[in-house]
Each structure stands twice: as structure tokens, then as C-alpha cells.
Length: 455
Figure 1: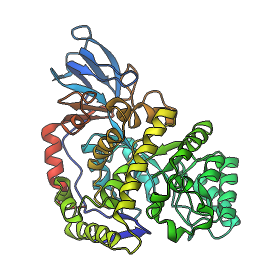
Figure 2: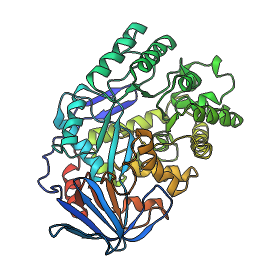
Figure 3: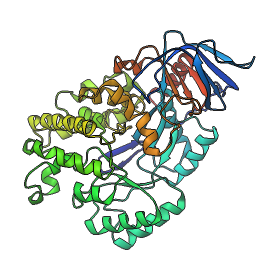
Figure 4: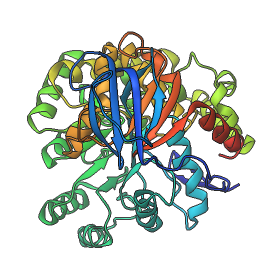
């Protein structure tokens, strides 16, 4: 099993899996007597029927009022809750020259109700993968792909930055991904050229760039809250990147919280969206969740032993770093929660993302963990769910994604409990509709079984 590493971001190549023979798209599918969580409002529409044709919601109304053809497949959804499928807006698909390695990754996302993913480390083969997913040849979520990342190693000059922008635009990628290490000069060249050709960029904030320049330059999203903690520390201009640590890991005890509102106001004024990836911080950085304990979480059975051992060692190595102080990291986690809540309260757009596959973040599963972490940060279940549904549609400028209404894409998640009452109900999946393809609980269980130990 190979590992593909860029700094601390590890993407695991997955074993090959056969495409399923089950789950053929329905000519017509209707859910009877279901409770609908439409997500454009905080409400539940009780006792509804919802009709699906050709991958879209063709009709919906109170039970008994929706007409179907004689060959429609009927799903009795009495007592269950239907919500839009979730989006994982900071996902990874292996950047390798092998389509078979990619298939199980996108499949695992889909089986856990993740119907849209934004790939944050692109590869030329991802263009073909996106095409095959869209055509239905490969089972997977809607795939939004960046190109290979702009970073300190890939961009050595302003001229190289401009060329990379144009090469990736011409290749057909959806946006540009930024990793650390960009100089201010090279970043400025990239941002200027991206604006000129009409492309967006997103991801990390390089230390030499800083969050204020990043906001001014017009990131589509800033991910991981990168640069946020540093912006709250007085005297940061006199510190080195090595002193601050990843995402301000080593300096959170120096944060001045009175600076938070200025940051929020700037993000809001410049329409910068934020993908917190709190799961990464909670599961990798936090001193109170031992690595050996996390390794026993149920979803870890999908990881092969080599990958899982690598994750365990990565966390243990971090905690043994001489600069790591448990109390400072607890403070970091607390500050991150306050930043997430401040984004919500200040009207800064939040998007759901967990950085899977990554250390103790398994594709699909970690997205549900992220929802719980958002609620723990102070969001209501509805506000947390918006980050992976209606907010995604707004970010993508598509009013047919992340919502249940007539004409919307039939990407749906059927649950056994009301997620507006308890966010944990998103785990209790009865079935998934992916562009009109119905996958019931039994089918999902069988496909998940095939993936055990393969990641």
C-alpha cells in the first residue's frame, strides 16, 4: 500500500473495488408519508410524498396528492426524515495515475450520504474521474476538483505562478488549491492572474501572505481557519512560522480575543467563506483523545493497518514535540470554537469540511463528526446542517443543490430520526439517493463491508 504525502497532508491510495451491479437508477421513485427537512427554512414538513424522475425532484406534496406512473418504485418512509445530501467541502481523492485507486474513496463518501465533495488536491486524472461520475459510470458524489496545489515547491517565481494559473484553467479544473510556502510576491502574481482569467482559489494561507492579505485578495474559501489564530496574537510580525506551529498550534495562549470581531467584519465584507475542518484539530491535535483510543473507533476498520499505524504515530509524534504544550492546545481548540461561533453570529459563510482522508478522519464518517463539532462550538443543529446543504448551493451559485424543493437535484439522505432535534441522527441512515439512484440500508451495509481494510 502506497502513501502519498504533501507535508502533513496524507492521502491514502485505496485498494481496487468492483463497481456494484445493484442500485440501478429508478425510472420513477416516490417516498410516501415522509417527514421532509427542506433546509431552506428551519422546519419539518410532515406526512409528505416526494417524487423523483431523471435524477431530480419532479413533484412533492401532502401524502396522497402526488400522482405517479404505474411502474414507480414506492418507498414507505413513514416516521422517517428526508433531508438534502451532505457536502464535504474539504475532501481528498488520491492524486495518482490510477482510476481504480480513486473509486473506493468516492464510493465511501457516497455510502455515508455525502453527495457532493470538493477535492482539495487535484490531479490530471481527476478531470476524467469527474466526467465518469457525472455520466454514472462511477458511483460517487458530485466532484468539484482543484488542480495540483500552488505551494512553495511548485511555484518558484511570479512567472511560474501565472503559467500554472493558465495551465490549470485550460485543463478544466474548477478552482486552484493553495498550500503553504508561497512567498508574498508569488502569491500576488497568482491572485492577479487568477482574477484576470476568472478562476477562484482556496485553501491554506501561507505564513508570508497572512490572513489580511488573503482576505483582501479574495479567497473563495479559507480552510482550516488557517491564519486566523495568528491574526489574534499581538506581535505576530516578530515571530517565525516555526514558532507559531501549524494553525497557531504553539501560540494559542497568546491570543487576544478582542481582535476576533475585526477579523469577522473583514471576512464578511469581502465575502470570504470559511471551511473550519474542526475534526482535524479535535482528532489530531487534542491532548485528551489518545491516539490508541481513536484507533479503536468503529470506522477505523476501513483503514488498512499500515495507514492506521501511521496515523497513530503522527499523533504521538506531535504530542512529543518539544514545542507542544497540552494547555496551549486546549486553548487552541477553545479559540477555534469561538471563531466558528463568531463566523455564524457575524454572517460569515460557513461550509462543512473535515479534510478526509486525514489523521483519524475517515471519508464520509468524519463529515458527520464535523457536524457534531460545529454544534459543540455553539451552532444549533439547523445551523450546522446548513453548512453542508443550503450553504453549499449558495457557494456554488446553484439553487438546486442542498435543498428539497420541486426541481432540485435528487441528492437526499433518509434518516430514522429528526436531525434538527439531535445532530447525531445524521448517523442513523436508512438510505441515500444520489442523483436519483436509491441505495437502501441493506445495499449500503453490503458495500461498506467490501471496503473494510481497504483504505
